Amino acid sequence: MFARQRSVFVADGFPDAAIRRERIDRLEAMLLDGRERLCDALALDYGTRPQALSLVADVISGLNEMAYMQKNLERWMRPERPKPLARLAGVTMEAHPVPLGVVGIIGPWNFPLQLVAQPAAAALAAGNRVMLRPSSTTPRMTQVLAELAPRFFSADELVVVTKEIASGAEFAALPFDHLFFTGSTATGKQIQRAAAENLTPVTLELGGKNPAVVAPTADIDRAATRIGAARMVNSGQTCLSPDLAFVPVGHVESFVDALIGSWRDRYPRVADNDQYVSIIDEQQYRRVLDVLDDAAAKGATIRSAAPDGELLPAAASRKIAPTVVTGVTDAMRIADEEIFGPVLAVHGYEDIAEVIDYLGGRPSPLSSYWYGDDDHDFRRFFRSTRSGSVNRNDFGLVNAMHHLPFGGVGRSGMGSYHGKFGFDTFSHLRPIAAHGFPFSLASIIATPYSPTMTKAIVRYAEQQRKAVTKRLARHR
Image (cartoon, rainbow, N blue to C red; front, top):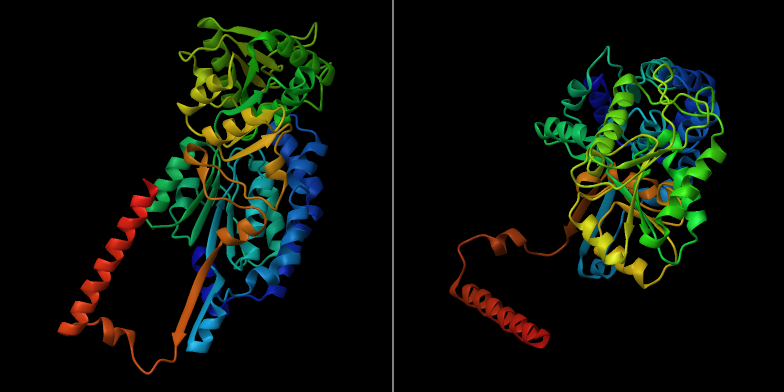
């Protein structure tokens, strides 16, 4: 598959804008024509996952971005020509965004369709051939996608690789021109190691313990309701979900009460609720419960929003009620592990400096959340902490806006995509330079140097030293 895509890419050359737009249209058609089969497969993979969620989050979430790419594609493809006046001196400079070649995309299980389709659209917009490796944890959806792809794409344009064809490790070991991975930090390390053997550049979209800060200026009830809803997207199985909330000490109890109340209003039933998403598999279900058991054993307070009369957690359906944890210490697993479930840790704080100090000693998350005004405290928080993005007063805003780059920093990832940023990720800015001078630069640079040339070089270096010394003196 890889060899075929590489050879056809070389033979065909760079596709024009019309071909790229048509490929994106085919990608959209594949998602929309197969939407019922894909959503049904996702429901089976999860156990319980409502069709509407899969439609919104996996099928149609990237359509506006694809339309945006198609509309702006020709402008993005134009070469940059810096210093146009240099042409008067006989110098021409151009920088062309050209496709990289064959791009590999490895997807996660939490939004297994969205997070292969959106980077695939960007790679196609940039003119590349694409190989998709969806998650092995969602085998039914992957199989449906593998059956749909040949109806819309030739194998030298876009192909789906299932676990029966290659493991994730085997896929990552191919000498791609770019490898794009979304998933856990632990797996991201393995992907980068595999890619390093071929010097394959990688984009890693990972996760982390995303903080949500409730500012003193915030409406506590509204912040609790919004953070509670954000925590429950896909039952918390979302790399952007807030993992921990920081609340002014005097408002912790009212925040927790409002949080649990909002969850009970949202989910009056859990066990037999077909709108309540199950934990993806037994391994993840057990892991979340183990994190809660560890916190309880070490002194944390666990409060569940389980409806009265329901026996939760329910092993058969892998459903865990929304849960809030207070009294968290660094000795607990919940302090360091990304939860990836319907659980939120809540910390009290006296001053925003405490939050900044706490976060400063920990790995950078994918996103941070601030609930409150755009005031001095917020700007202090923004300047003094690190995260892939910052969202104020709502969940996932940066992710929803294709005019902004989306990506992590540090342990939450490297590189970015969405809109023009995705086009740039999967392109190489290839320059061309020429001049019409009657002499050659090489003849000037090549040895031997005449005594006059040597003196001129030494004199120039000394002039530059004096100039920088003066500038440094002004700084002092």
